[in-house]
Length: 175
Image 1 (cartoon, helix red, strand yellow):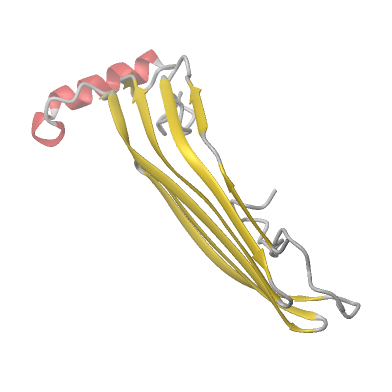
Image 2 (tube, helix red, strand yellow):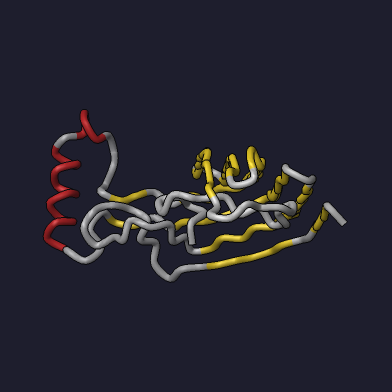
């Protein structure tokens, strides 16, 4: 009655017509591979006591994505020609680059972990904490935080699940 465990299986795939992952003019600067697939095993474990509760959520899986090569300036032929000429005229600096971002295919293990806890220090005060780890290929993110909550009324019964920590509006977990 005071804990729960959930385990599942997840699969997803996406694809974009154009790769706009880069930051030169004409690109969007966002991850947009031609194909992306992932398989993972997500889990959640939550437990509560009288004055302490916590939640662990995460997943372990495998991913693969492919990105096509793309010119530096896909919407500006003049700038693209200038980039090609600059690189061709400076082989010692740029090597054999022809102003094209190379295509690639990557695969590997991915994981994420989210932990949240809350401890009732006094009838109106709660100390909480969160930890987030996320990894997939060349993407890595982590964050951690602590909070102190005050309620206007005394909490005479144990708080219930799920744990709802205070989050910064800049947190990747804020909705």
